[in-house]
Length: 568
Image (cartoon, rainbow, N blue to C red; front, side, top):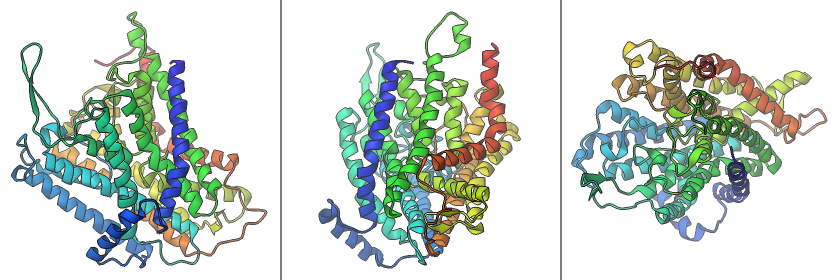
């Protein structure tokens, strides 16, 4: 560890704090339908979209109708993307002559991108055409992110409204998220990335002669436009197989820093949106504090673990940090911080191979995902995932003092608690259940790249990543088989919709309730006690649920390495 490393961590944290309020204020105005700086240009386009689609922007939806619209939107996206993957060999903008994607892989990829997971069982530059990358993947990067933001806004309305039967219009929310938030900022980010050295071209792959006289084909394409939204929309799907470790996706230390900031930007800003919409920004800052403390705790474990290196390597007389699987452009700090950021958010982009991290360094990204991507999280999903834990924490606080729990003037009753527990329990069902199924199938076990607890962690990481809609891979697991493609796709669908439906049900229930006046017995939800309670509930639930699985993987691996044992 170095002083310079900690300065970079502090600087990154300061940037995220600085971004939260202005971006949150802008997003609040956008979803309230207020005039913004971009309204003169974008408002006519927005109205045109509504007219073409036959949408009345003033007609809102009941939470069940909102759920139906979300489902319809995702089904349509899946059909279009699956068809594009299967037919790409017959379509234009295919200079490398890529053929149809195999049906199992096409199914997995289509589910992956509509659920904002972006799990990739393929190498983009060797599998997909330019048209598929642009019209299929980049397109879904925008829409899956926009739908997540829309759902978060609907959940916030549940807390901010009283005696209301509606939570907004999904069609209006997803249009505004795309048009006013994602498109303009991603455009600026793409131009910045082009300046940093990322290609943006429809020209063919480049053939060159190396210094040794060998022929090499260098893949290029419309990269910058996809990378910008993959980071800002916390999608994570790379244009190239090496993802953000590839110099054409992440060429400099500055691009690395900016990409990390883009990953956290919307998740941080939505906490401010929450505070503004419920009429008390301190409520939003309290949730931000919970996320921030958990983020810093993760960094404080991963960075020292990777900087400390591997004891087995040290025993050979080789000192220094763990540089295996890391890009020298970013070093230990740049890779460690990126790993925590990308798994705190449901981004999944990687600039180093997590499979090569130390046992403890690889365990924290795993835990981040198993907690449900609530630490800033994906665009939208982080906030409504955190709100679910807040409801449980408030319920626990109510039990402690013997009164009906309240949050933001709404009584938290059995329906909300049941929906919150349903949302929480669906993730371990997908993560642990999927892992158990895979480890009972010999062909799936043989796909592990390593023996012992590390190989087990590869499988656990895959199902944790897909169920959490993260998409990062531990590497080492050969998952491009029909078995894994289908089972991991099911895990993605469970992780997305079995959380979305209960979250919207909570929003609908709370929106219909009357606001209860604050009294002397109301539990304060803006101070350190509340922040500590929520963190405690998150860690206790996470520990009780996932500690046994972690003990079989990274924990026992760490203890074994400390004792000098390894697996060949």
